[in-house]
Length: 383
Image (cartoon, rainbow, N blue to C red; front, side, top):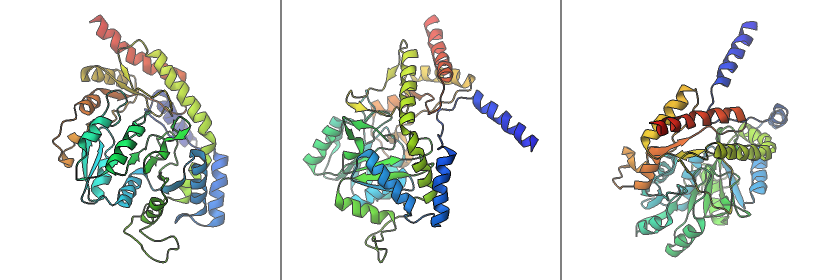
């Protein structure tokens, strides 16, 4: 037992010397035990159990949305959304700068992703280029809210209404974001958010789907459970096993009490980064002034891929982790068989680096990260 304790201390010491790019925050043990005890009392672990339903109701109230359905993850959520819209045989317009889950969900629905380039300031799909890309084959629009920003939802809504197209937002990053006083999930026909362990709010694994349309809500509910109707007496459509478990709901419910602290601390950490790196010639993501963001990521755009590589080298030497979301640009992935040019998305994907940002990061850790980045620019200026 003593040996195990010593090994645990040594592992913790090594962990603390490294700075991860992100880290899961866990609920207080007492709160989690309260919900886990309910699972034992109710003896139900899956199949739309009482904790899943409670979690859905609390999320609906917290976010101010009409319909919300937990899913096993955001990727299956996007597949369910595509299925509900019946886009088979059509093109779906989507961002070239996003995670692979978005176009993969389009292909899973027997549709074809058609990539659209992004705006250089907020890294979201460019509405002018979106409108130019619409054709007789277009069946839906699937834009991504990227990092801390949101798409131009007003313009996209206008375009969608003009051409009679449904809109599904990949809102995996967007928990808690508001446009004015309105949840970002209330824009478009469907939104899908992730509850993955490393997201700003997590249930260890999972996601959810929101819609304000009653007709789509019924399709989403049935598609998530193999196509079965609510009374589970028959099947109305093709569907998936998209459900989530009582255990994941327990983690999510227990974590909800931490949300005010999480958002406040992430905002403070983000602002400290901005202050410490303010003199450097780097590009920050532009966030609209009417947005209440969640500070979920710390993306920086450098002037060149060479500078980015120099920063990566400096961070690695200090045992500091980083991520290159998203590279390459999706149109460059060979299995999508897309030969179009996306100059902005391709350029951003070559120059971007996301620095460590998570609930629990300390001021000294942020200062250590910034020191490593600043040293690179001191070398560049000196040479």
